[in-house]
Length: 310
Image 1 (cartoon, one colour):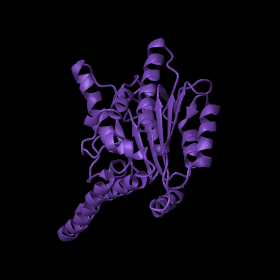
Image 2: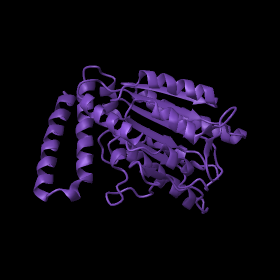
Image 3: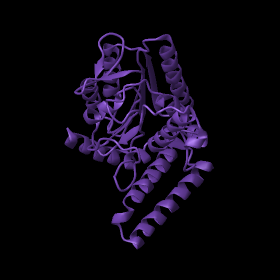
């Protein structure tokens, strides 16, 4: 299966400059069990839905409240039929999860959805670039089954053993509409930026409340790790996430809605992704070669930005 995803990733790069890419967003808000949780989960899902639809552009936004397993299957099957290898998929899970030491399950209406079935459904979606943000309790237990070489997996908990209800979704939703999350000020919030923002805000919440933290968000995007709280060049985590724009802000969002500017925006994002990739490979390159490649990319980025601003 890993080989299939690597082939899809390579094909997506070849197609990137010839076909406009689409991002498919699917947000799933699970069962609350209690009125308070039901309200929270719905509020956070609506917050995310609103941010994504305001950004609009070349994306398909779907949000399901308290869905059944059949409804989730049907939606992912529809996306699988529509998506191309150059496209992207963002799946976000909000709610409660369980972990029995072997299998993770997402609590939904009717029979719960297992991590094994979810992974199989995602594997059938041709979009090579995939981001799964599992913000439920016990979500860390889903990393091993969900990870793939070209899939970014973010979980609200570091293991399946962190069973308390989580608040990570509250701050992930905030990251998608908060300019402060855009730390490099390129008017796009990447998966890595959103992760770091939500992680920091979650930590601050427990510190402010003077409570022992019951959740520790992690990220995995190498296809072989268990998730890291601090992604960096040393552990190899975060490279794909840094190059994956989750939501566009400001001028980028406006350009995405303009058919005339959308190709330039996609070119800009591809150059930014190449710069992020180069930064992660800096240690393996001679200094002169790194500077040469970086200068070339920055010049091309400046030209593209100038054309976008016209």
